[in-house]
Image (cartoon, rainbow, N blue to C red):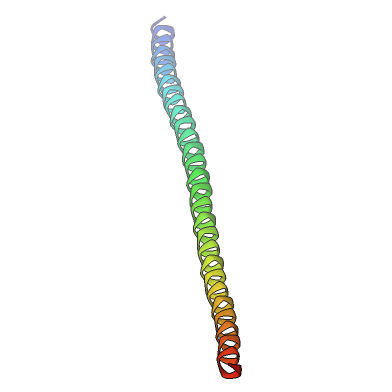
Length: 103
């Protein structure tokens, strides 16, 4: 009878330790799962923010390029217009000179 009581005592201690180990393991798994979920959410947020930043940066660069091209075209057009005006002014002056010489 004493051997049977001793055996039940040892088995009950082993069962309690097993329950404790399983409970601690389950808690750790649950915490790891929550941490993994949070890390995954953080990664998705970072990816979304990075995509938005890249898109905004691309838009900014495109706007700067468009502005630069517009300014360059405007400057070139001004210079060509000035050249044309000068050409016609010279031609007009030549005509006036010929009229003055002819009398």
